[in-house]
Structures are given as structure tokens and as C-alpha cells.
Length: 165
Length: 127
Image (cartoon, rainbow over all chains, first blue to last red; front, side, top):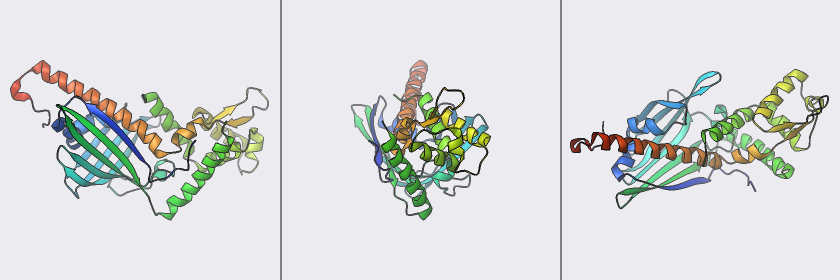
């Protein structure tokens, strides 16, 4: 059953890649490599600015083709923890072209989407292969505007659960 | 395994939900099936305007329409909403797909490396 969405939820994905630590690290920290895999199929990453150091900022642009022409989405964030080949932690928020955060609902996301999320990438060498544990955590927002939307969406979710088969 | 098609389906669900009238229509349908006339009643909108919103919801798989020509009552299909109800569910799909692409890209890099097979150019962390 679907519980009420909570923004403090997280996604944890574990994978092992057949490549050494340094290569996997570069997938996240070298814009050339990052652009090659990050965007969804049919999308491109025209901008990937990454100042990979604690306190450094990142600014990512994703361009998607829609029936109404190309649509650009911007993301901004800050590196929280950087240990080369071991651990990379950064925050992420939807943003505008200048890197100013915008609310997810403005971007058509449901209110259950947290305003800021944190991505943690932890790497471990396993006999020349790399085990990656990726954790994407929602950081609860205090914004009253967001709360209103969450209540509306929770109500709808409750209706749906009742209406559900 | 999530596919591009599933990604696309989710985007469609999101854009269908990104409209207060359509969310209100869904909330109404959550209480039970209704005809377009019944749905239009509480809104200060023309029937064609309501129909247009319903078409968007229908395309996103959120609303089903009956096949009886005259009445065609609408009902809610909650399944796509379950998928997007939690942002983590959506991101799980996104990340799984991303990591699939990372894996493909790594294989591509690996293939390029072995085909050039030059020990002086082993660095994949360049440029």
C-alpha cells in the first residue's frame, strides 16, 4: 500500500561495475564522462559545471525533446563530502539557468518531491571491480508553500487508496 | 528493469498532474465514476474545456472512459498515481536507468581501450 509520501524517504541502489575505482569516480566528477551517461535516453546534458571540492557548487542542465520543442531543466547543488575514489556527497535542487533554486512543483513535480535532496555515492574496490552504493535522500522542507501542496497531494493519495481495488 | 518507455509514461503522468483543474477532476473521480456533464458542474468551465483536460488525463492513463457513445462515464485509474505517489519510486526508476547507461558507457570505453590497445593510453580519467 502507498503510504503518505514523506520527503525524508530515500532510495538506495547497490551495483557492482566492471571497472576500477578511479574510472567510476571520473564518471561522477569529470563532466565529459558525466554527460555521457547521466541524461535520460533522448536527452542531453549541455551544461555540467562541477567544482568538485567540499563547498564547491555544481550546476547541471538537462535538455529533453518534447512535442513542444526542447525543454531545459536546471539543477544546482553543493558538494558536501569529497573523498577521491571513495565517497562523493552532494545536494541537488531544481534551479533556473542562473543556479537559483526553484520549487519542484513549479517544474511540474508532485509536492511529495523534496525541495532539496542529497546524493551519496560510496565506492569500494572488490578485486578490481567497483561496488557502488548510491543513496538519494530527501531533505525535509519547511517551506509553507510546499506544505500546502503536500496536504493536497496526501488527500488525493488517500482518496486513491480508498478508491483502489 | 525500467525502460525509456516507462520513463516517458512517468513524465506524462507528471505533466497531467501539473494542473490544478486536472487534480480536482481526479479528486472528484476518486469518489466515483462520472459523466463529463457531472464533472463540469462544479467548475466554471465549458464542456469542451473539461473534455480537453480529460483527454490529457486519459492519455496519461489516469482516467478510463466508458465505450457507450452518449454517456461515456469517466473513472479513475489509480495505478499510475501509485507509481508517482512517492518521489523515491520515481527516482528509483531514474537511477536504475542512469546506472544502466553508465554500465553501457563503461563497456564502450573498455572496448575503445582494447581496440586501440596502447599501454600508454590507459587513462580513462582524461581529459
